[in-house]
Amino acid sequence: MTVETKKKTMNLNMGPQHPATHGVLRVELELDGETVVKATPHIGYLHTGIEKTYESKLYYKCIPMTDRMDYLAPMSNNLGFCLAVEKLLDIEVPEKVVYARVCLTELTRVISHLVWVGTHALDIGAMSMLLYAFRERELILDLYEACAGQRMMSTYFRIGGLAYDLPKDFEKRVRDILKKIPEGIKDYERLLNDNMIFRKRTIGVGKISAEEAINCGLTGPNLRGSGVNYDVRKANPYCGYEKFNFDVPLGKNCDVYDRYLIRMEEMKQSLSIAKQALDGMPDGPFRAHVPGVVLPPKEDVLTKMESLIFHFKIITEGFKPPKGVVYNAIESPKGELGFFISSDGTNKPHRVRVRPPSFVNLSALPKMVEGGMLADVIACIGSIDIVLGEVDR
Amino acid sequence: MEEKTKEFLKEKFGDAIISESEFRGQLSLETNRDNLFDLCNSLKSSSELDFNFLIDVCAIDWLGQDEEAKGRFEVFYNLYSLKNKFRLLIRVRLSGNDAEIDSLTSIWQSANWLEREVYDMFGVEFTGHPNLTKIVTPDELKGHPLRKDFSLTYETPQFSHNKNEPPEVI
Image 1 (cartoon, chains in turn blue, red):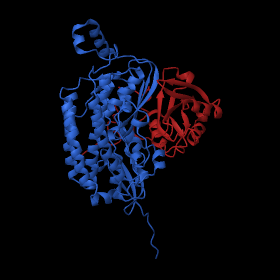
Image 2 (image 1 turned 90 degrees about the vertical axis):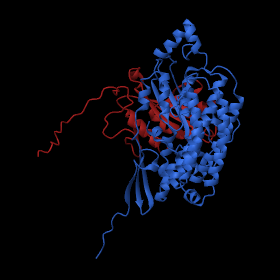
Image 3 (image 1 turned 90 degrees about the horizontal axis):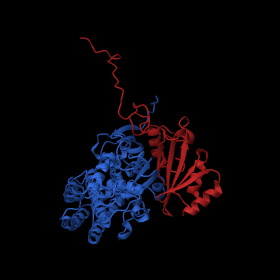
Image 4 (image 1 turned 135 degrees about the vertical axis):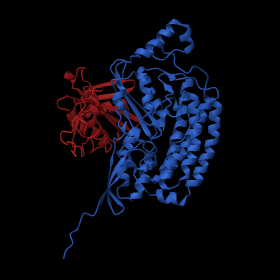
């Protein structure tokens, strides 16, 4: 008697409500026992048409929507959009704004990586990391609140400057952060670096070679984990990054553990940049003086006729940039975040395209997980550091 | 680097470069769709230029703005060279009735999802793409949301009044 051989593989849906997918991501897995034969990510559950909505908004009204894409790093998104519009308008911002922006975006990188290290360790089984990471994150969120009045969706950077002046105790608060967070990072490293379980779950897992990583378009810590030296801050400096000294950490083994080490090192580098920015921050206005584009100072609006007219016109009509297409890339915590803006000479953008780092990084997931174990899929998704708000937009 | 890129392309694809423009320090070259694949392939394989990164693929719908003369859709390819730290935009105009272009998936894998997104949002077909399906919008959605004629505010309510599934009468 012959037994008919059945199909050996099994299909399994991971997500979209799986806690370790960091949002609503569904990965369709084809399994042979516990080995992943094929993985197909399905996205789009959080698609809200942000790119379409931009087309019906005045330029300055687009900024609050950028926060909602990568909600773990709001200020990086603000910076990307503001720099792109400033490039389109060809305006320069005061020195103080440059330093304040650098200081705050580097702290944003720290909170994004803190959430990452907390949730990634949680996925792998180190529960207490999340609590420690969120403890330190709170300090920076308090700084956000002092600056912008909001803890998460800050919308603090505006076209041509900042929304408000820096708070009076800004320096004291940042110094406090710069003192406390390195102690926290030391604790995390003591908890994780030599942790037997953590090392077994991450070393040699989710490998992707340098050539493959470039071919798949990976950017950010994922690309640098494979040893490719590409950091937009160094390669094509924007927002005055050429004035700061920092190292770009690179990995060797192309695995999840190296991506972890790189993010830990990046946090230290970010704190060092934030310190340099704080030390070098000059005094001055917090907005550029560009009549008709940037809001005039509040005192002038109350006392001068022209300022009041400009204020009114900017709020109601916006401004009209010249016709053209610009692309501006920044190094967000996830990778290269690009804003591609096409202007047709009216007061609303004709098209805004966001080059989302998470979206492109996620497309390389099958490369990392195929041939590995089912449990390693979780480690790989965590190590890519996706935010579904940005993937789907 | 700009001069080198221009020279290289003029030498190899003299007629294929329709126009070149520079705006805010960013060089962009316009080509036609027949030459796109070969042009990108040679840009990547050239050891001097070495455009090994396809950063982004996106499109613009120029409906209502001389779309008849030049073509309705404009597809942008954002290439980057890690070696030279140089970025190049390549643009291709496509007509509205026949929006079809060669897929670059066989040159850069990153084109896979990026082209799917352009297909989903604009309905531009990429020939030779291994899996050209919708990526972010739901399967039920008809039309391509980022086209300018896709209605943003008005949506036809779809009531079937349970014609196909009449309620059970107890």
